[in-house]
Image (tube, rainbow, N blue to C red; front, side, top):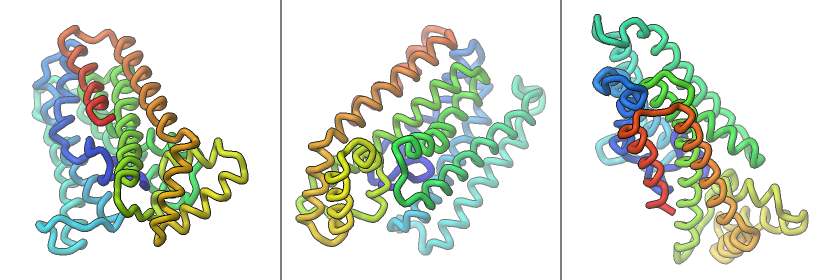
Length: 285
């Protein structure tokens, strides 16, 4: 479905729990030869931004809120508070720590990455029919930039940034695969308007012959209220190789992530743990 800042929460679920990725900054710091504790502050700020982005996702998608949020206004206020808390953490990096001399740079990179995410989100919101290139660029500007930030914050080396960028983009792609499979497994699928912006649909619009594409677009529109039309649209996506393409793109992103990691020449143990994070993608394929 439509990409959120960190992916659609109805998808594979890799974005739902920041704890899955909280070790990224510290591992990258260790892989670059540093003490992982040096990254504690930036890791805390990153997780706070992560939680804020999830709330913004739900609000922008108009998803049902958890019971702990009595109203959208309360959730919005909490998300803003999380961002301010992240800023406070960055401004209170302990004097004398190894990252103190880079504190200003860390803040600039953090908020540039958040601006990139907001820009990508805006583009996603205003593009009714993104091309395949548009979709991938938006994914890189959002999840890719955010996970690249986590790795940069720990190591401040380009190879680790590339690893994080491709890891984040892979997660975004995997979310759309999860959405497609969930709809295909549903007894009575109903397609949302946002599904027309998903990666499988962007792929089909790009590769299908014009008559097939026109028929698919009609079925996607009718599938918002007609289960039979939704089934037909999903079948057309399958027949034209949408899922096969997504799996191939995930594998391509994984290869790029590993190549970037190898280029960074990480310390063995931490490097192996970073590479192992890519195996979490396999668990959701």
